[in-house]
Image (cartoon, rainbow, N blue to C red):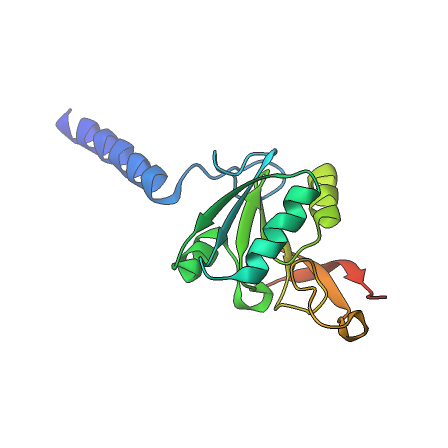
Length: 167
């Protein structure tokens, strides 16, 4: 009788430990990771305290009507790792909203479309920091770069969500 009780208690403790370590992952049809801090209505942004382009992207998202909560951190690699951001889609800041991860200078209209369509992806990214993407508007518009907004799955697989052609 003692062995089944000990085994059950061990399983309960293991389940609690996994929950504490990894949070409450959302296993809904989106396949995205959801947390209380990344609700459908609040964009939770993690960025370096000294990054001006990240602040400009936050301003872009706020101007587009998103409620934004900013967390300055010097631990961006840990944030990206926890969020499932792989090196091929990495950029400077990482955000969460509605169970999705938003990596880098993704235009507000693409985040709005993502939340409306709810595809089975981990999130959207604009890899790197293309000149002319939201928050990266610097220099002459003639020098702005075309770029792709990509959907990603956290395993390194991507697909083009939208191609952005600069004027």
